[in-house]
Length: 137
Image (cartoon, rainbow, N blue to C red; front, side):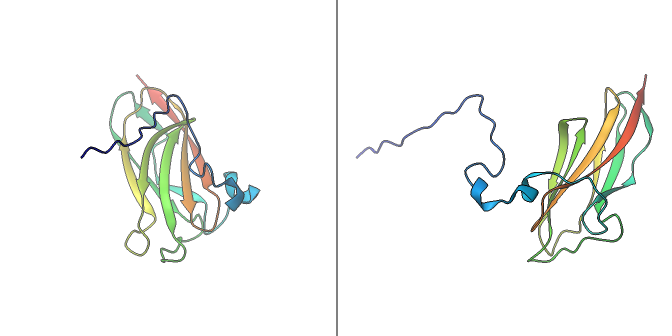
């Protein structure tokens, strides 16, 4: 006996992570925050101001500009993402309890710009910090 499974193909459609669930989120959960919050704002622990084009280097980001964000089952950081300007270049998902909200990305850049760290905790919108980086030949 053969069964036929329906196949859905969607081309060129980019939906936000909460697509179809918008009614569950209040407006403050949809907008990334860049203000300083001691528990939620990411912090560049280690990141150079200048690097050579194509050379690998480390960027360490922790969550909690004024102390460490908790990592509890009921409240933790879901992920930390790293952007160059508006392009996401790396993301690390974290597990509650077992993952401390600090990550080190090893990256190489062809051009300078604004490094942006985005952290999304539970019970809150994403929080962002930025740092200018220059790339030399």
